[in-house]
Length: 108
View 1 (cartoon, rainbow, N blue to C red):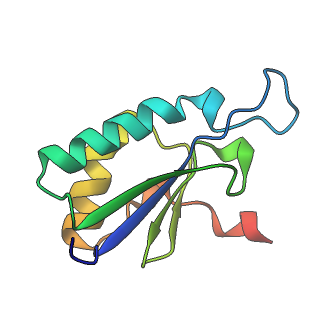
View 2 (cartoon, rainbow, N blue to C red):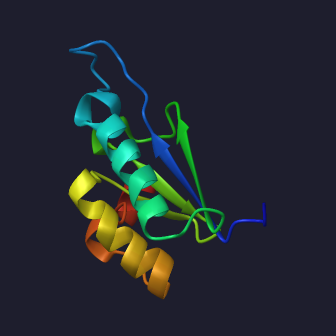
């Protein structure tokens, strides 16, 4: 397998209902993971894009959280409906999806 051009990480961490930090899992992260995996296959990107689900990677209240490397772009509140746009615009054209990007002020 050739070295992929992009590596997408999606948090699928699931905390108990009512947990004060929330979790990506309770915000439909597994459906996002499944949709992204299928879309990568359908668009012929297997081998160019590596997809990995993770445990907690950060701002739980902003989930589902996704990070795209090597660009280091963090996306928040990503839904399965956003998958096509991310793959076409970010992966295909190299332009991040501004409306989904994690707000810079979140990092302090």
